[in-house]
Amino acid sequence: MKKTIVMLLGSMLTMQVLSANTPANYQYPIDDKYDATVIGTPLEFSPKLPEKIPSKVYTIKSIDKLPEIFWYDDGLQFSAALQDHQAPLVFNIAGTGAAYNSAKMIEIQKLLFHEGFHVINISSPTYLDFLLTASASHMPGYAPDDTQDIYRVMQQAYGRVKDDIEVSAFHITGYSLGAMHAAFIADLDKREKKFNIQKVYMINPPVSLYNSAVVLDKLTANDIPSVDGVPQAGSFLDHVINELAQDYKPDQGMRLDSDFLYTAYKENQGDGVFSNRHTAAGLVGFSFRLSSGAIVFASDVINHVGYIVPKDKVFTRNESLMYYSHASSMVTFQEYVDDMLMPMLLKKYPKKSRDELIQGASLHSIEKFLMSNPNVHVATNRDEIILADGELAYLEKIMKDKITVYPKGGHCGNINYTVNAADMVSFLKGGNAQ
Image (cartoon, rainbow, N blue to C red):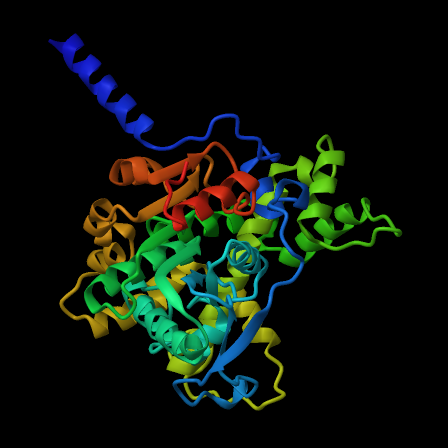
């Protein structure tokens, strides 16, 4: 009897793994998950695309009057690349801390425009300009609220361009946190039907923002050298830059793009900056900490929380922010959630517990939508670094044949790899992602 049960369980597990699409002979060139996350995809392994596309930047007016310290704000920008013929429109949502014109966003916009789509790029709610100008709470991190903000921005953005284009269908995509938001938006749109979104393509999504933030916070703590528990980011970055400078070639210049980093990776795998696993992991953690630090400071100032900035503090236009910048960079995202975001949410939603709110900011809360909608697809990596234990298995379980798990690529390192790009285009054009 026990043997029969074991065989049955083994069969079920095999079926579950085989239900996910796993590309064979996958030749993405970077093996280490942290190196891949930092380096991305070199041009020689990317689709051949035009250097420029006819995109235009628009500005949406801020929803609130901001404190004087944010005097430079003049609204939220987004970009649109529009075809001169009828075509599907894809809303493209940025990942944590990223703007509409970040490198990954431009890569996706260029690819999709080249393939015949209208594309509107929208910044993440965790990007400072979005937090300042388009967030109703000015305290991002709770997916249901952030979704309402993005959905409103999408309507405003489309309103700016709709008279200039013909749209045959609406789709949505996003990477990292933007992938989670894309799913939440599609679920919301299923009820509100402002767009009747047809296809949803989620690239490297977290299952739980809170869990992923804890994972990334640990990279800063564990992979950047510390003194008395304080990460020494300055000396860490000096070390990285000095190591990379060894690969500087005067005739080629030194641009810190994927091609330069990949050259350093290939030539110095035995030593140099990519020989130490902690270096790339530390860079990932440091990048996340920069994003979360900006959130902490701006949310604190606008909402008068008094967390690192006194509630009655009034900044002058040219006042130095060095002290507050340093203080905010020391706050983990987990601390931001526990000490700033959660108290606000518990007051706003008094009938919900802390655990219910954290669950509500995860894909678990829209599980039924993800499982039932045949036009939602997840693309992720077997070595994804932002997923907590068991979360990749969870995605494979609920998505079944609607998920592609690439064997490597880290977190979003292979977004622009030829295979990944072709899979996304195929899905959005009506085929099946492989």
